[in-house]
Image 1 (cartoon, rainbow, N blue to C red):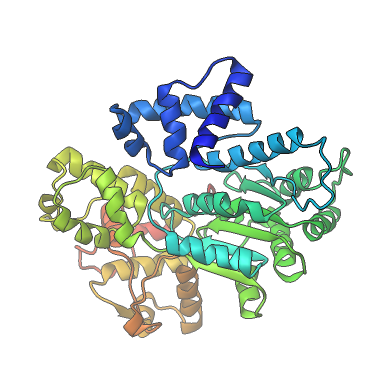
Image 2: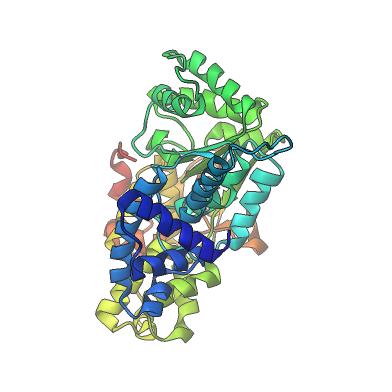
Length: 462
C-alpha cells in the first residue's frame, strides 16, 4: 500500500465511522506522517504554525484511535493502518478460496502505557543494534540503560514500532508506580493468555508457570519501562525493595529458561541477576545509552538556538543528554537571546529545574558509599585513581570497588578509554549539581570534607 492509497484508506475509514471526510490539514498531517516528516515540516508545507499542527494532530489521533480500534499516535499510525488494511482486505476476500495462503494474523498490541511521542533525533545505530539482538539473534532479555533524560523510553518506542511485526503480540508496561510482581503477572497474563476465559491465578509460582507457557507457545515482546521503580533507594544498583523480591525470580526465569519471546527493559540500573546472566553467556544484552552526539544538532535547531559554531561545545558539556540540553537551551533563549557563544563565556554551567529534580531522584537512590564517591569526585578537578579515592573516603578497597562498579552500572562514572578502569571522574553537570545543590560540598570551597547531604536518609519514591 503506497502513500496515496494509505491516505485514501484513512479518509474512507474516517468517513465510514464519522460521516465526515478528512479536511485539508488532517490530510496533510496523515500524508506527512506517512513520509516520516516532523510536525515543523508539515506546518511549513501548509503555511501554518507548528503549534497549530500539533493541536489538529492531537484531535486527529483521537479520532483515528476510535476508527482503528486501538490507541493511535504519530509514532504508530502507519503500523495501525497496516493492521486495519490487512483485516479489511482479509474480510473482503474471505469468500474466495485460499488453500495455499501463508498470511499470518496481525500482531496483537497493548501499548496504552507508551508515553506520547516526542521529537526523536538520531539513534539509528542504537536501533540497529537492538533490532539485531532481538529479531536476528532472538535474545531473551535486552536492557536499555542510562541516566534520566537520555531518551531510553523514546528509543524503545521507536524500536517497538519498527519490529512489532516480528511478534505475535507486544505489550508495554511501566514500573514507575511499582506494581507488585503478582499484579504485573496478572496483568501480563490477561493479555498473553487470550483464551475466552483464562484461568484466574493468585499465587506467584502458578502465575510464573503460566507465563512461561505463554512465552513458549508464541513469540511475544514484553517491554517494561522504568525498571528502577522496583529497586530500593539507598542501596547498590539493582537491589529490590523487600516486598518486590519475586521480581528477582521473574527476571531470572526469563533470562535463563528456554522460550522464544523477548523481554525489553528500560531503566537507570540493571537487575543484578540480569548482569550475572551475561557473565554466564546467556542470551541477554545491555545497551548503555550515551548522549546524542552529533544528532543533538537537530535538537538544538528545533530549539531555535544561534551561533551554530558553538553547538559542539555545548553538546559536549551537557554530554548530549536531551533533557539537559532542552533545559539549558530554554535558559539561553530567555537570558541570552539564543546566543550560545555568549552563554559559554560564563564559567559556571547552568542546570534547569527539571535537570536538578531528575538528578535529585537519582542521587538519593545511591548508597551512602556511592554518594561519598560522587562528592569526592566532585571535589576533584581532575581524574581520580582508586587509591586517591580510598585515601579520601577511608573505605576498604573491596567495598570501594563494589561502589564504583555500581556507579558504573548507573551511568554516573566516566572512564576515558586510554585510562580504562584505572581513573574515574563524573560528568561536568554532576559536578555543577553538587556545587549548586549542596554548597557545603562545593568544589569551590577547596574543602575535602564530606557534606551533610550524606547524612540524609534515602528517598523512598522512584
